[in-house]
Structure formats: structure tokens, C-alpha cells
Image (tube, rainbow, N blue to C red; front, side, top):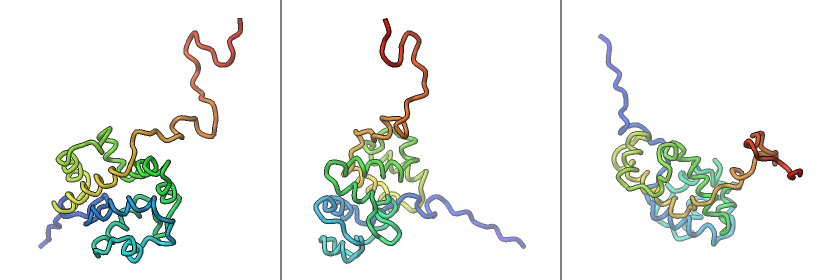
Length: 181
């Protein structure tokens, strides 16, 4: 007699996107980063020092790790340092969000402006976890986006790689370089 192997449904599989059980703690953490010196490690004692005393707040560590703000040993990365700077922080975070949520940005030009319902639908289809996990993924995404600036275009998109000129030929009737009469 053979046993049928039950395939896990999307609602019972592990979520593919990071989430915290305390989105409000994530918001507070993101507000505090630019105001504080770079820590040696982002761990629960640091969160407690910053006023995030609820033990569930430690779930934000997984989120910021997934975003690449800290490494596997919870040490701040260059991405963390960029986020600390007032002049680059919000744009830097938007780049990290776009990378972490690439699938979402492939299906929607401005998902950070999307409704809760549309985001819930996306996470339900493309992620996993139960109803509560999906809701927390939406809330985590929204909390991250509140501290990001998606209006600026990264400088590497404005200039060709390695300061090389483009290989695109000029349009007919247009000349590269000084005009000769």
C-alpha cells in the first residue's frame, strides 16, 4: 500500500519574504538608526537599549539581515552605514527593498503606493505562510517603505558602467562631439 505524500499548500509553507511580528518596533528602529552611532552588533540588548524592550522586537533582526543592513553575525554592513546618513539613507533603503522584494517590483511599478488588499493578494500568491504571516509581511513591507525614498534613481543607472561611453550610435542627423562647419 502506497502512501500519498501531501504537498504543502502556500498557506502552510515557509514565507518567502521577511517579516516581523512587531512592525511598530521596526518603524522605531528605522527612525533611530540615523540618530545613533554605528553599533558593533545589532542584537536584542541593543534593541532594548534603544527602547524596544518587547521580546518580539527581536524579529526585526531577521528583517534587517534579509535586507543586507547587517551580516550573518549581526554586524552592520556598508548598507547600514549608507542608511545611517541623512542624505543617502532613504534612497539606500529603497534600493535594498527593491532587491529584497524584486518579485513584487517586477509585478508592480509602485508597490509601496499599493493598497493593503493588493499587497495581501501578492504575498498570498508569491510567498507563503498562513493568514497572519501574510498580514505581517504586508505590514513589514509598508513599515520599510515609510522610511525609503523611491523617487531618486541610483547614480549607477544614470551613467554607463565604469565611466565608459555608450556604444549606441547617434541618431541620424545627430553627431557626437563638436559640430564641424
